[in-house]
Length: 178
Image 1 (cartoon, rainbow, N blue to C red):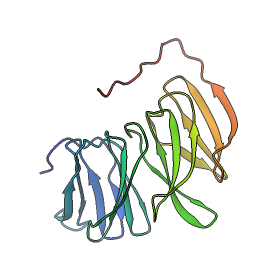
Image 2 (cartoon, rainbow, N blue to C red):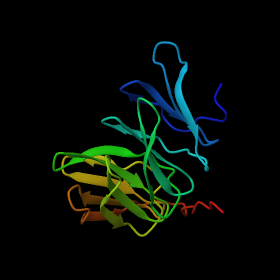
Image 3 (tube, rainbow, N blue to C red):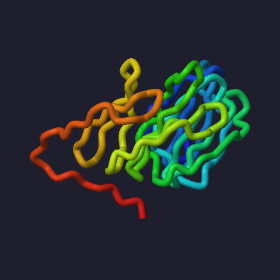
């Protein structure tokens, strides 16, 4: 039994199924038996769907830290602070032949991080909380904000290609993580 609710989608990894829970638990389960292959506890809850790129499991958390782990052993790799809680799913992509992850942050930005090193490739400030997973469409990244904007970014540079406001009859609700 996992120590907390699972609010993110499980993700297939080379060695099993990666799962996170709101307690901060992160682990990889055997696809045959469901037994835990490895596990760790983060210092903060996680509700973001992780991503697997190559042999790295990338996990975002409510403390704004994006962390990488070996999918096989759980050994920790890099950790990067993206400035705000990561509650939307992390999206794997490729830029110029290298694996990256696209990270939505409630600080109002989408970050492209090199999946192997954690180095920031680019960051795009969208002006309001980004709480859902960005999607890749060809050479574009499309992300939505709590303020009702849908913005297309260039996958290679993060520059804005277009931005539209989605009509709504409701006020957006800003999420408070204090």
